[in-house]
Length: 248
Image (cartoon, rainbow, N blue to C red):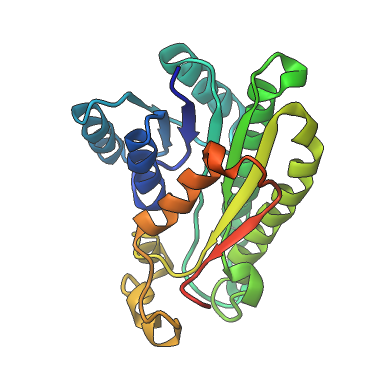
């Protein structure tokens, strides 16, 4: 039986790259998206046309009922869930924390922190051997911003990803004896559409001079470590946070 993996925020960027890579590795994939149904359907078609199994579910990861529906659909359409890539995340226009509207702070924390908690919680309920599951693997998407804090630009975003790091370490210990591994990837600059929201679409490439490797990552370069962490090759790896930042 093929592994069944949920990828949140799977319609574009790192999420879409993860869907493609996992499908190529033989995973049946359920991707979630919040708004862009056309982009989600495009990814699904790519996977299905290549002979894989993939479904898309509109879901707000910060809403418990939506997360429940996402996991239910994945199980009904594809089979018992064996993996989660908690990738869904948001940012906001870059500015000092003192100037960030509270509404933007709440939205970011709801998606980046509460969303990760709700999805990880539901994954444990589905996969834990202590709860009737068969075990599995969770990969959370953090950020290398946790190391430098994003001063003057996105302290709030860095703080939200710091919470993801703590979730990774704590949950890994909590469920290690229940057949579940929990790890995270912490990308640096990645060439994705998220920079449009920040107000600087070319930001990733502008940062090239301060990245030792001289360029931002392609989303596929983040998807590859995600796929490894979900695989049996990483069977002795849990509680790890993999920084993938071109040397930053």
